[in-house]
Image 1 (tube, rainbow, N blue to C red):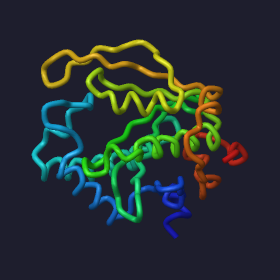
Image 2: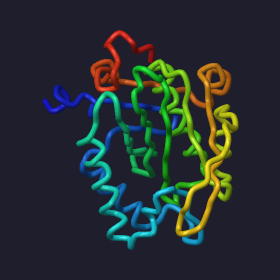
Image 3: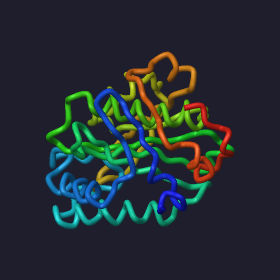
Image 4: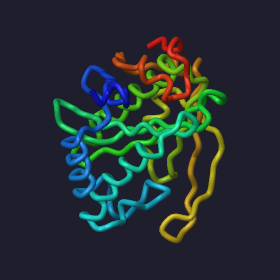
Length: 220
């Protein structure tokens, strides 16, 4: 079976309302369709790389290509787990957990997007809870980092619910103008005090070497 060679295909994260998994072909097509319909208002740009400025067909194709690229370049020292988020059996967005030199640094970063029809329903908070549980309970992370532009209060609010603390600012050039990113940091201790949803993880043990960890590491 393909999962014997790429066990991440069998990884499942579940919350009361959501399931997160590597997208199968149908899930990937649904993600591309979501992106084509839009994930934010056109008058602002929440991403450092403005991929959503592409025309709808190109935007959809970029989602597919980026998924394949990250799988193809995966190494235990540099990985990005791009998980399709399903609500009531429908793909509603993408949640990423990524790290470099994780076995040494025990640090992860997160990123995400939701189709516009699925925003403002608490889904963003719940899908972040899922990957934070994977990071801290499953992979024994020490800290998680995130960030949001000053004009993206919804992303910042999700991070605050999970206990992230301010960690400075960074300036970026986006769409030819300067923007300020507010960096955020979450320690294991803070995560333990701010869990927002119960999470279960299935299929993690055979994946651990792909994250740069020995099989006995998991506590999920």
